[in-house]
Length: 401
Ligand SMILES: [Zn+2]
Image (cartoon, rainbow, N blue to C red; front, top):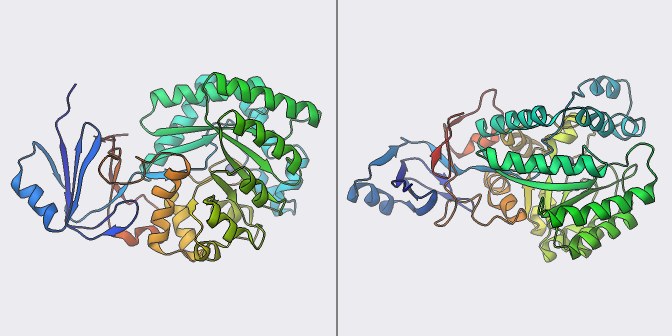
């Protein structure tokens, strides 16, 4: 079916994924793809000299690409809010994990949850994310741990991809925690075998692991990355969240797409990351929720020229938020990031990490994902009770849920 072109126009400004453009702005979307992005006089002329059947005058609204969340854990069952009380009585995140809580509690609950329920929970989470402007979501496995359960979660992500309006990028987080009662060596072998199956069934093109005390060790991570890379996976890792386990070296050695967390990176890592083009994913809500009192050195990393992105790290244990705007408010107040640095870190920068050049930007050729906001570009510096999103287009179609 041929769709007629859609013209969006505003007197307000727009973030095109890379820079702030002052209004007036006109965006033409044809067959789901942006064919024109014009500002100033050219934008006015496009409106005046053409008579598009579908023209939406958006007043003075602020426009951005649909936001991109490049780090989430959306597929899980159960509830772990009780852990907050354990932490209040003095237990640390790693102590709760070692005692069989944390990730293990979610693994048990998820394993006991049927496919339809897991899919419906993940779809609800994606819908809430859209209500805050997020249209592209990377989401990890890692609450299965054992091979068959991880494979079930990856297949569920395929179902979600084919039934959901958002763009979904599944990542195989094979090495999240060691399953209780499993021998370390055997489990590493099991992940290596599973990597082959994931590649053969084209269930994911990304591999993630958790390098940390109480999780996976450097040598194990190195072995897993080597095989994953040889099978064509893009690599990313959780590292430097509670301690420095040389995650910077590992990420650079294997040319990972990103290292996420990075609160305890080595002092030289900033320069080396900038030089190698390895991005760092900042997940500041996690630190606030766990009350670690530590945040990544975003200012220092930006000054070194490192590419950063902001993610919700949505998960049931350490970051319940589904809103990138909440992350943005924290980045503004706690990480000393400017509005434009934040916008970059929620649009084209995470899209590049996910290998999606036509996502996270409003330039010609990009997917027609446009978020329309009440208020100006400073909205990302303010914490909101209610979403300031007015409307959302995905592939040029108005999102109605
Ligand atoms: Zn995470």
